Length: 489
Image 1 (cartoon, one colour):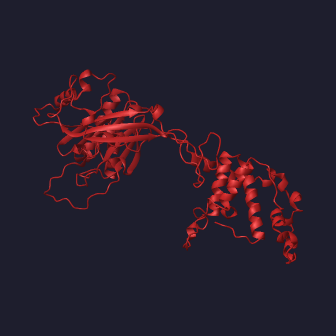
Image 2: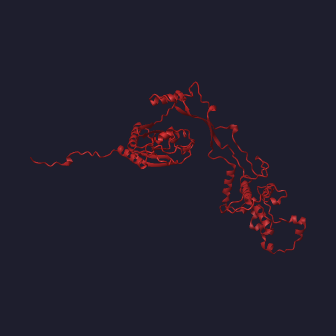
């Protein structure tokens, strides 16, 4: 017989080693779980039990990996609470449950304090189930609303969890993101736990009470359950309209003896403190019954044992306005804005210009240094001395009237008044602190001057009032320095 050579190209050869997109997706999920060390008992319940409300106050570790399935881009997010772990080693003969199962049965974090009005850092899964560690598969752009896609994705999650021996609960976010619908699974040994969420447009009448919810729960168990069911109940009452009971503080401006503002005690001079409108936007009262057996309480359409007045635990929570109107903060912020102003004081008071003050007595420094030491007649006679004491003082016309300006200067220089109301408290030996080298001591001259300038800027005429006070203060300081008069404070 003639041996005929056969061409291999004439036969169809199928490559069975080629992996489909679904298999590649499953393999990548398993690889991510292994990289994060979530496999082979990595989440056994050997950690410290969670404290009361610990999940809402602790820091969270978030790790993300991008993965693509078909034309859908997904984020695989590992969320873990940063809580201290127990150092004691687990013996081989000890029976240790899955950490997720332990956290689910603990009731210390049943009602975590979380701000639902804002973007709180506590994940909804941690708030609902009390989990300290879990994985979430989240779509990056479009939400997953197709039922077939949801089933394929959930089957991939089941396969990846089973093949990698992952003990950490894994969830998939489906439907619209604002609905917070998560489907998940957790496997440990021979036990599988499925997580599901149902959204109802209208709540059935039987599910509005504990008796109906218990019937649904016992029906889902599927086996006779003789032991009582432990439930936790919380009633929340919100109050957002306070009407006449709203908290408003009257504005107390220093040296305001008339007008709409309330008069302030002359001995207590400080920046206005308080709020213009009530900073509390909402008060929430929680009445809680923690860990109650279902056979000792009745809650149905006709009768209920859950009276808020008999609740064993009450808690009150307040939500505040994002930007409350506070007197002191507004006053300081306005004063900080003018601190960077480059406008000269002569723009507000032209009479303080150099040409207008060059003939004053205090501006001739050489004559001051070379003047005769023999006292003049004006300095000897009391009447003439008092008349010529401050002949170089310039009278400024500004928003501060004479009485108000006099009270402020007496506050800065109390030694100029016979019966001083604002004496400086002379401190003892103060230890030098280089960290406070640019700060003023409490109730010192600089401290009082800064307080008055901030008050003048906000309530007595703005920048022009600040310039007027500064000009009067500067002239008083020059007068005291030239005549060697002690500067208080």
